[in-house]
Structure formats: C-alpha cells, structure tokens
Amino acid sequence: MSRKYIIANWKMNMSLSEALQWLKDVEENFPEGVDGAVCPPFVYIRDLVKEARKLKVGAQNVSWAEKGAYTGEVAAYMLKDVGADLVIIGHSERRKYFNETNQDISKKITLAVKNGLEVVLCVGETLEQRQAGKVEEVVRTQLREGLDGVPPETWEKLTIAYEPVWAIGTGVPCKPEDAIKVIEFIRAELKDIAGNKGKGIRVLYGGSIKPDNFEEFLKVGVDGGLVGGASLKADSFIQLLRLGAKYSS
Ligand code: PEP
Image (cartoon, rainbow, N blue to C red):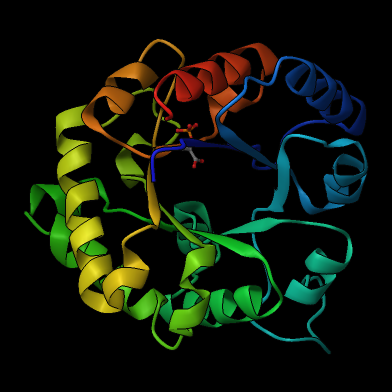
C-alpha cells in the first residue's frame, strides 16, 4: 500500500467549538493523494461526521460487549450508527490506565469489524521490555492474541500502529531505523498469520511525531502516522498530511 494514512488521536482534549474550527481548517487545506482521519472524544463524533468531507472520523475506544447493561460504555453498532468510519483499539493508555488485555482487544476488534468499522490496532513495548530485548516477543503476543478470532475476511479493515510506549507523549520519538525494524517484523507476522490478506495492511508509526521529524519516518518506509500531541493544532496536522501526500503514490 503506497497511500499514506495519517490519523489524529485527540485523546481527552478539545472543546466542541475548537473541534469544529480544527475540522474546517484541516478540510480546507487537505492535500490530494493521502488518507487522513480524526479520532475525537466520543461526544464530538457526530458533530464532526456531519461536517467532514475528506477526513474519516473515528473513536478512540469501543466496548467489548455487543450491547446491554454496561454503564458508561459505547457499542460498536452505535459508532457505526452515528457515522463513524473507524476506531482505535488497544492504545497503550487504555492498556495501562484501564487494564485492557489482549483478550478484551480481540473481542473489541471482532465486534468493530462485524459492524463495518475500520480498526487501528495499537501495539508496542514499554522501555523495560525494550531494555530486556523483548520487543519482538511483546509485539508478537499483542498481535497474535489481539487478532485471535478476528475473521480473516475482515482483515482488509485493519491498520496496525506500532507505538513504543516510551515514545508516546514524551517528545522522544523512536529512531526511524529502529521503528522500521519493528514495522518490518509486524509486516512479516501479519503475512505469517493471514497470508496474502495480511499483505496490504498498513503499518503506521506513532510516538512523538512532529512536522519536523515525520519525514524521517516516511523516508524509511512507514505507511503513515498515528499522532497525539501534534494533531491538536490544525496547522501542524496539515503539515503532517502534506508530508504524507508527498510520500504517497
Ligand atoms: C498517541 O497517543 O497515539 C501518540 C502517538 O501520542 P503522541 O503523538 O503525543 O506521542
């Protein structure tokens, strides 16, 4: 896949008026030839869906339950119903603060794809795991357990984001040459698990991406970026989209 994919993860930020202004600015400056998405907090999804023409709109999480007595949760069919295109699943902040397991994640992915949503599955190691030489072991387990039971015919709905936990929100990105090694490993694993169906899946990098370092990642062959902090300002997200467009074909 040579069309780059740049996804904004706003986390728990932005007011409604800021969100709508951001969308207007990004849509007006959206470059040709690149795929872009924004994942706001749940409560803004419907407002953004109504206005978005070029960007896809998605959620940052979804319930592992289909529906019912799960106070505070949001179901995959509800996201689809309000027009969401995608959902981020297994972000390290959800794994860390909300104790999400790979088993929860595989249930979430299964329900999301069943309801026609694209899924961005996040994987990545902590600093301790990297220092202990366990990057491949950790990423392999997250991929294999997270994708366990996900029907192979839905794999075209998947994107993977390699996000080393120690690089998220720290201002210290992974070295591009280290990131691409793990991304190549992920590509090989996907091919091993899903054969040809795993081949077209885009593997993004995420972790302290900024307009002044993103090109280095594109140069080594990442399929795009999952962006937190640098996605909050329309200007910097537009710059990232332009870089993505430059490296798309
Ligand atoms: C993220 O939250 O997925 C992320 C990569 O954040 P940041 O860009 O702020 O490191």
